Amino acid sequence: MIVHHWDTDGICSAAMMIKMHDDENWTPKIGNYYLDDDDLKYLSTCGHDEIIVVDINMENVHEICKFASLRIYDHHISQPINCAKEHYNPYLWGEKFPSATTVIMKRFCMEANYLVALGIIGDNGPRCMELDEYEIVKRVMEKENVSFDYLENVVQLLDSSYRVGDRRGVIENVHLALQGLEDIANENRLIRSADIVEKEVNKWVEKANFINNILMLRMQSNMNIISLVARRLVWGNVGQTAVVLNEKDDKDELYVRSTEKDLSIIISRAKKFGYNAGGKREVVGVVLPKGEGEKFMKHVLEVIM
Image (tube, rainbow, N blue to C red):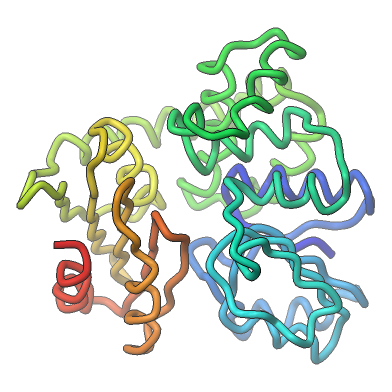
């Protein structure tokens, strides 16, 4: 069983693993960076004696070791999972990789194909042009005879499933990704959901305000778009930091993205307060109980101001 993140990098990472293992794939509940009781029950009874986790750092992933052999391939901030048969994450030895697809490519000496490129673009957007790994993207563009804008659109299509809350669609997207770029680009299911997402994102992006050189936004949307909103704000304003608080009907979400500040301390602070949090040096996502986002915002501002 391959357990993966719900975004493009996670989808393409799972697709790369399926190429090697021809296995079933599954994603946790969208927005949960942990396995809840229902998820653990499913994984423990699904009949798989090995579970491979890609592109997601779940705080209780060690629970899998109680009923299956565990392997992890990731690039997020993490602590060693000692019970895992293999925990391959360059962060653990001080290296930074732009995507889980590049981690898997290196670990298994795989070809730098369109799946790797989509993972790079998915996690970095246009800023991937500043990375050494952009050479991979350029080679894929030449080989597939497509533009960067085309690949970006494919990323938005794959991401649209989780953004509208379609968990089953996320799982299906792994197999769609294996069919090729054209099949993704022409999938009507994704085109419809991407259109819905784009309208919702545009509505909120224009409401952000600068406060002490930081883009701040308080929004209310039940779609899973907080990361995309923060990316649009930062990628559209060179050298900026964005803080987005989303007050959903059932919980609060806080997302911070920066091109110039080390945000990793926010993760440890959030966990100290008992919140679910994860990310990388340049991006942090926190899930909080309803009504507590505003309170934790003060601690975020202490770090970035």
